[in-house]
Length: 149
Image 1 (cartoon, rainbow, N blue to C red):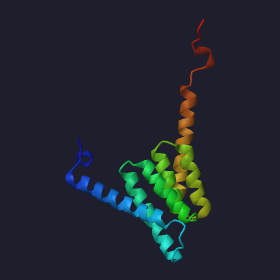
Image 2: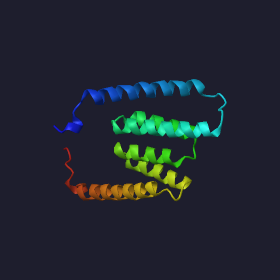
Image 3: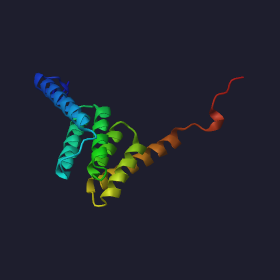
């Protein structure tokens, strides 16, 4: 077993600490919902923080939690392309390639010069093409499908 896959006390403590911080922040955000925001700078800070928290959750394999955080970021600022790119990457990691493609496209719609999203969109389209090609090659012809009498 490699060291990176081994649960060490420092990894467990980091995970616990990040979870506590994450839960605290999410509770704070939910308590503020519907209240006036002090300024746009605060929203940008919140969006970036939500994205960082989502990235941490994604790195630890908590894809559903990551998606939840990225969606909260999108709710706060629907024009922040990084949130859509992160959603696309997370759906890619979950094997939901068509959904990933939609989010990478949305990121580029917002920021056509977003190189990371361009690269991710090209990659996911290649993955989709290869998987569709593989499905066609491995699908048995209709005449070989067994029938019952």
